[in-house]
Length: 415
Image: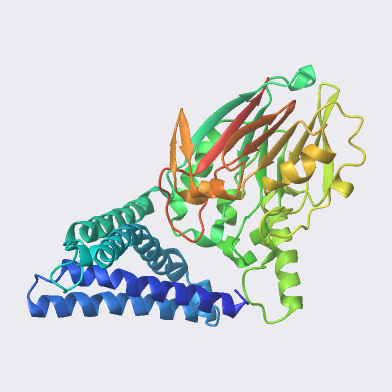
């Protein structure tokens, strides 16, 4: 957000796509009356320019950064329009390739008397492909609007995980795993409370939260402390930090203000009654048998995500315990460090990806654009004796909705 040049580059890309899509708008509106064409074209550019202005204003106007309405809906609608135009552009590009090929053939064979062009007037755009592109883009945009209704549609997923080295006293242990609450995006307290009630109804032995309690600021939890402090479990509620919890994605008046925000967020975890694990471990005991629970700060191997986590501080002392669970927000940590350096970590729990909040999923197939960046992005993954479970996220950020990949509460039973 502090890198304004990036926002200008994105705005430039948006403008180029707007100009490109406008050619199709002119094609499909060519048979409309003059007044209708003017309204359509002016309306198109009013919306497109408004989106670019909003985008360029976002890094500089604090009220836009903190406004839930803007961040949740206005910004999301503009982003949805951008991707809809991008999808439609695929068809427009195909049409341009077709026109280019016909034009080239007309030049190559014109001396042979072949007829490829329209009497010297050039090769017109295909109205059919223009309508097809606009239809696909409009369908995508409509799907994104529909997804607004799914953002609180919590899904309880039940998973049984078998481990040969699990102490007998922990067989049947029921763990609720949630991640990515992102309280700064919420606008419906009753809907959020319904999800908490779903968790409590399961009477789990242990509740684990794997980071991103807020979007940026600790104050985002003020309204929801009396909701999430209802979460209780006989063996405790434990939590870790995610990349958004550090306030790295907004402008602060000073580094000290940013540090104070993080310290106050740690206090929020304490107010909730959650034990925040900061590169450390605790021992869970049942019937004189013990397992280790490790929790580290955010550690991401992808993109520019921070590496605050310190496994070399959390792990020592756990070697003697027969079974280990690791809470680490970013699933890329599993392949990058956990599997290679800590092969006796039996189960890692993560979140972070949200499943992109968009994709296709059924019992036999799952797909999301996020898989182009993350090998492990939703559900269970296994390598040898080690397992990773990636929660699809309780909350949402950026896009205030869910399409195909719904918000998740995971009930894990160890067997």
